[in-house]
Length: 126
Image (tube, rainbow, N blue to C red):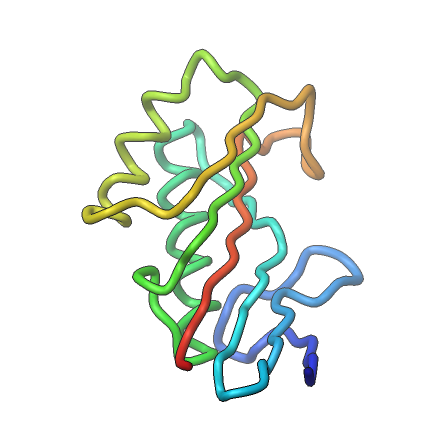
């Protein structure tokens, strides 16, 4: 298996010393994409959620994938009681059969103003 780490041009750049995407070339032609957790600026959870999912979409597109290729999504919220706000936005981006999911509440994130962080695993080709 060949693994490539990168932060593709034209996609959101990392806020620290890490790669945005781990691209794993599988035997037989399939590809797994593991994205780093994404946060975004915004005054409220809905705005941050939308921007995070837009950033994820851009990172996937830079590797020839789409949100439809996402097989797992992990979400970290600073206030789990606001899950329905995030869920409403997420449904806009994943209108069909949703990917597998884990959502947890955390005390804080990388940036103090961040209300949500999301990371995904996508599978393309075979």
